[in-house]
Length: 425
Image (tube, rainbow, N blue to C red; front, top):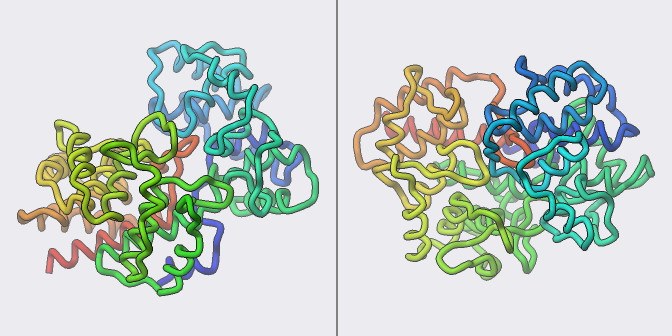
């Protein structure tokens, strides 16, 4: 299977470039190879309305970064006008990584006012940074307390470049050069993230009845520490990666004790990190799968269901992702099935803004748990997946801005097609 061979042969992860992260390298590390290509990437990815990034509120963070990076360019002037329009409306922030700190930090650089209180940002700049904020070091500046792993700061090119403070030869510069060459200039916000990628792919494939090579389980087991599992080098361990890695190992008949997961317990649910801003439904669904059974957690997840039948999540823009995660953990939910059947598009697809391969795969997974005959909807969805071919996958996952983990998406599509074929035989 080509997808699994890629995981073994190429550790640099199938993560799409980030406008936000690329803009930070343009502004803060113009000495890095690929600078001109990053400038072109920013100019080429501007939308006709002057913004960058995703729809609606998802445009704010990438547009701030791109405008700051391109100051003096005509694209920046159009972007600044777009920012003023965005900031003149009631401000709705997406639940992306450290958005409440990134927005005031970049607005200050551009001399813009936002309704956000900058005092938490200013206070953090005066004291040692919590490890979970090292991933956003670019808004704080270099710090003596920050550690690198193989030269990498928290799996972030921008954070690594800021800590490096110039083109000094060594592992950090080697990492940055390798990452920028992967996409010929632009860079993802989080890379590499081997454990995240492998765990999610194993769970997607194995839970649908597909096989994966035995060595992949060994690679996941080797990544565990006393605190649990981290998505990539330099990132702190967290409940989501720990839970999904535990579930992946169990599916591979290589289980390990779940003690590390319990350190993230908070009453009825689990927190991704200490002092997190909002809880994650998908993380708690993954925790339930890792534990097998937990009455309080099941009740908490049911309490989080929206009246229409879906779930929302902090790690993804689409409710189809969160709903698939939770229905997988609860082994079905007919109210969620009703919502999926109501929201199928005329072309057989599903999606928040448009029909996508990824969201259609999640919808088929949700339907696969139904006790009803949903063959027609699954068949139409499967045809949409087959017709997608090599089209790019829109970014829907939350980091500092939206991104697409393309290998995970491909695995979800393969799993969905397998499930649809099983139902439609």
